[in-house]
Image (tube, helix red, strand yellow):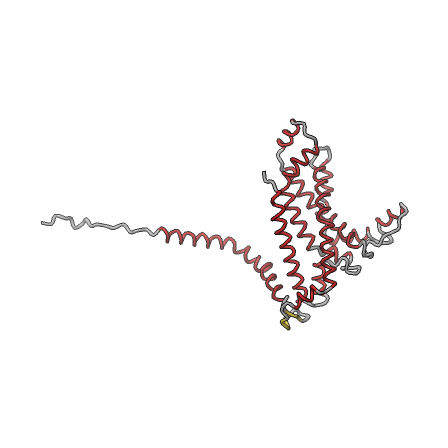
Length: 314
């Protein structure tokens, strides 16, 4: 006689596919992440990736005055550009400009930041003065220096004449024009560089200096062994940003010299602008823009490869 209860049935627990569950979780997580990134991706796509690929595309074509492609020329725009003496002068002036502005800006800003970091009475006033150039636009600053460099009524030439020296054509003499633009750029960039370096100095723990004072360390020893190493991450950031900004200088060139005299201040960004919107050679301008992109990319990679080795994060 079968005594088994028909109400009791054997049930099997279904086997859970953990790999499938994990895969679905990863897909959901990825989808959520992409939704959060979507606004940024759209902005980057419209204002960064599309212009980059469009510029690369135009660099292989001749264009009409409206920027429409007409004839495919391949690498001819690049070959003609590298054979042009004007482009050679533009590259030379650009690298000289970077050499003039980047080290000088950082050294002066670091000196001012070290001074402003001292706990002195009224130091807040000087901090405000040192950062005041941040509130001045490129156009206003360029007009200000345009009057300072004026050959007849300029303040700088007035000082030179008072001490018995001849006046200088700061913006008309090929020997001085690039230096004059570099001085203007250094003055304009001091405020931002000073503020970043001052923030880096104030983030250094004071106990390091207190320990050094107990050991009888001198001021310059503390500056060399504590301040500079602990400030190295900020210096690394400032150097990288300043180099990139120097390669992209345009506004003060357009207002002060328009690339002259004799193309000595025709930096590569202004050369791109002139080729595109004065000569209507959008293909050549695009080729120069791609070369500028590659130069900045290489300089940034070199900076990360060599400069980051000397950065101390602790």
